[in-house]
Image (cartoon, rainbow, N blue to C red):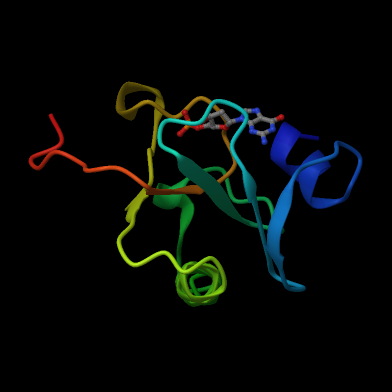
Length: 110
Ligand code: DGP
């Protein structure tokens, strides 16, 4: 079982921010911004390239989570980042979105 599946089922503890039956959000262990939250589906999906008709509803749940977290934590600007595949920087092969806030972010990202 992958590390984020273990976090989702409580086997590995995490600092939770938001939870529904479909998604979980918790603080990243290696923060890249003053606030760095990971939003994951509880269902194991390896990466964004594995989203299809059968599981795409979870993307709505993830974006709803981001919106709810922003309201709950009074975050007025944030960046949502998904790394899909090793060359894009994905190190944990369980779909996740980085929700980063609390500093300025460059665009284009480089
Ligand atoms: P990525 O490189 O896009 O696959 O991002 C994976 C992120 O997951 C990285 O920022 C560090 C974080 N991470 C890895 N293991 C753990 C863990 O056990 N707990 C928490 N909270 N974060 C983790």
